[in-house]
Amino acid sequence: MSMRPNISFVTLGVDDLERATAFYKSLGLTPHARSNEHITFFDMSGQVFALFGRAALASDAQLQDDRSPFGGVTLAHNVCTAEDVTALLELAVASGGALLREASEPPWGGLRGYFADPDGHAWEVAWNPGVTIDDDGRAHLPT
Image (cartoon, rainbow, N blue to C red; front, side, top):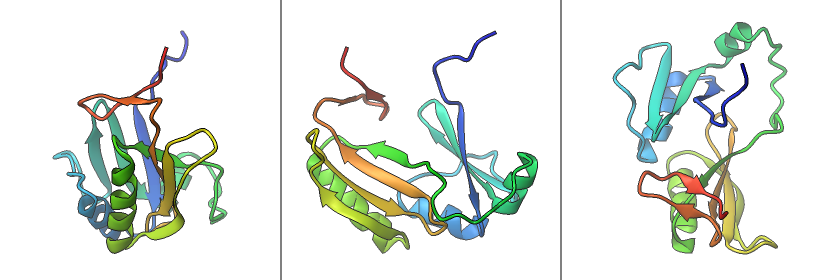
Protein backbone atom coordinates (compact mmCIF):
# COMPACT_ATOMS: atom_id res chain seq x y z
CA MET A 1 0.00 0.00 0.00
CA SER A 2 1.23 3.48 -0.79
CA MET A 3 -0.24 6.94 -0.64
CA ARG A 4 -1.99 8.10 -3.82
CA PRO A 5 -1.04 11.54 -5.17
CA ASN A 6 -4.16 13.38 -4.04
CA ILE A 7 -5.67 15.04 -1.01
CA SER A 8 -9.19 13.85 -0.22
CA PHE A 9 -10.24 16.19 2.58
CA VAL A 10 -8.91 19.41 4.08
CA THR A 11 -10.54 20.06 7.46
CA LEU A 12 -10.17 23.31 9.39
CA GLY A 13 -10.79 23.48 13.11
CA VAL A 14 -13.01 26.46 13.89
CA ASP A 15 -14.24 28.11 17.08
CA ASP A 16 -17.75 28.86 15.80
CA LEU A 17 -19.03 26.52 13.09
CA GLU A 18 -22.00 28.73 12.21
CA ARG A 19 -19.80 31.83 11.78
CA ALA A 20 -17.18 29.94 9.77
CA THR A 21 -19.82 28.39 7.52
CA ALA A 22 -21.38 31.81 6.89
CA PHE A 23 -17.94 33.23 5.99
CA TYR A 24 -17.22 30.57 3.37
CA LYS A 25 -20.76 30.80 2.01
CA SER A 26 -20.20 34.55 1.53
CA LEU A 27 -17.12 33.69 -0.58
CA GLY A 28 -19.38 31.67 -2.88
CA LEU A 29 -19.10 28.12 -1.52
CA THR A 30 -22.20 25.98 -1.04
CA PRO A 31 -22.45 23.58 1.90
CA HIS A 32 -22.97 19.95 0.92
CA ALA A 33 -26.25 18.28 1.90
CA ARG A 34 -24.36 15.94 4.27
CA SER A 35 -23.39 18.90 6.49
CA ASN A 36 -24.90 18.97 9.99
CA GLU A 37 -24.64 20.82 13.30
CA HIS A 38 -21.18 19.30 13.93
CA ILE A 39 -19.47 19.66 10.55
CA THR A 40 -19.83 21.56 7.30
CA PHE A 41 -18.68 20.01 4.02
CA PHE A 42 -18.00 21.83 0.75
CA ASP A 43 -17.47 19.92 -2.51
CA MET A 44 -14.31 21.35 -4.07
CA SER A 45 -14.19 19.69 -7.52
CA GLY A 46 -13.09 16.28 -6.35
CA GLN A 47 -11.77 17.16 -2.91
CA VAL A 48 -13.79 17.97 0.19
CA PHE A 49 -13.21 21.07 2.30
CA ALA A 50 -14.64 20.71 5.80
CA LEU A 51 -15.16 22.87 8.87
CA PHE A 52 -15.21 21.13 12.26
CA GLY A 53 -15.10 22.35 15.84
CA ARG A 54 -11.50 23.17 16.77
CA ALA A 55 -11.52 21.38 20.15
CA ALA A 56 -13.25 18.34 18.65
CA LEU A 57 -10.75 18.17 15.79
CA ALA A 58 -7.79 18.39 18.16
CA SER A 59 -9.30 15.67 20.34
CA ASP A 60 -10.05 13.43 17.35
CA ALA A 61 -6.44 13.65 16.17
CA GLN A 62 -5.12 13.35 19.74
CA LEU A 63 -3.36 16.70 19.42
CA GLN A 64 -2.98 19.46 21.98
CA ASP A 65 -4.56 22.70 20.80
CA ASP A 66 -1.86 25.26 21.57
CA ARG A 67 -3.77 28.10 19.86
CA SER A 68 -0.74 29.03 17.81
CA PRO A 69 -1.76 31.69 15.27
CA PHE A 70 0.39 30.09 12.58
CA GLY A 71 0.62 26.34 12.35
CA GLY A 72 3.05 26.26 9.44
CA VAL A 73 0.30 25.76 6.83
CA THR A 74 -1.40 28.00 4.31
CA LEU A 75 -4.12 27.08 1.88
CA ALA A 76 -3.99 28.39 -1.67
CA HIS A 77 -6.69 29.31 -4.13
CA ASN A 78 -5.40 29.95 -7.63
CA VAL A 79 -7.43 32.18 -9.91
CA CYS A 80 -7.50 32.74 -13.67
CA THR A 81 -6.55 36.44 -13.84
CA ALA A 82 -4.56 39.01 -11.90
CA GLU A 83 -7.76 41.01 -11.37
CA ASP A 84 -9.35 38.01 -9.65
CA VAL A 85 -6.66 38.14 -6.93
CA THR A 86 -7.66 41.62 -5.78
CA ALA A 87 -11.38 40.92 -6.16
CA LEU A 88 -11.25 37.79 -3.98
CA LEU A 89 -9.08 39.47 -1.33
CA GLU A 90 -11.60 42.32 -1.15
CA LEU A 91 -14.51 39.87 -0.89
CA ALA A 92 -12.78 37.96 1.91
CA VAL A 93 -12.22 41.15 3.92
CA ALA A 94 -15.78 42.40 3.28
CA SER A 95 -17.04 39.00 4.50
CA GLY A 96 -15.21 39.21 7.84
CA GLY A 97 -11.72 37.98 6.99
CA ALA A 98 -8.49 39.89 7.61
CA LEU A 99 -6.06 41.05 4.95
CA LEU A 100 -2.63 39.58 5.73
CA ARG A 101 -0.79 40.74 2.60
CA GLU A 102 -2.03 42.99 -0.15
CA ALA A 103 -1.82 41.76 -3.72
CA SER A 104 1.76 42.05 -4.93
CA GLU A 105 4.09 40.47 -7.46
CA PRO A 106 6.19 37.59 -6.14
CA PRO A 107 9.73 37.09 -7.51
CA TRP A 108 8.55 34.23 -9.75
CA GLY A 109 5.85 36.31 -11.50
CA GLY A 110 2.14 36.62 -11.35
CA LEU A 111 0.26 38.19 -8.44
CA ARG A 112 -0.58 36.98 -4.95
CA GLY A 113 -2.00 38.17 -1.65
CA TYR A 114 -3.10 36.59 1.62
CA PHE A 115 -6.15 36.76 3.85
CA ALA A 116 -7.09 35.03 7.10
CA ASP A 117 -10.54 33.62 7.72
CA PRO A 118 -12.31 34.55 11.01
CA ASP A 119 -10.44 31.73 12.80
CA GLY A 120 -7.04 32.90 11.55
CA HIS A 121 -6.49 30.25 8.86
CA ALA A 122 -4.26 31.79 6.19
CA TRP A 123 -5.23 31.62 2.53
CA GLU A 124 -3.09 32.64 -0.41
CA VAL A 125 -4.95 33.94 -3.46
CA ALA A 126 -2.69 33.63 -6.48
CA TRP A 127 -2.60 34.16 -10.19
CA ASN A 128 0.38 32.36 -11.68
CA PRO A 129 0.75 32.66 -15.46
CA GLY A 130 2.62 29.34 -15.49
CA VAL A 131 -0.28 27.40 -13.95
CA THR A 132 -3.36 26.37 -15.91
CA ILE A 133 -6.74 26.40 -14.16
CA ASP A 134 -9.18 23.95 -15.75
CA ASP A 135 -12.96 24.38 -15.99
CA ASP A 136 -13.40 22.67 -12.61
CA GLY A 137 -10.98 25.09 -10.93
CA ARG A 138 -8.15 22.58 -10.54
CA ALA A 139 -4.60 23.84 -10.94
CA HIS A 140 -2.23 22.08 -13.33
CA LEU A 141 1.53 22.62 -13.31
CA PRO A 142 3.29 22.72 -16.67
CA THR A 143 5.00 19.52 -17.78
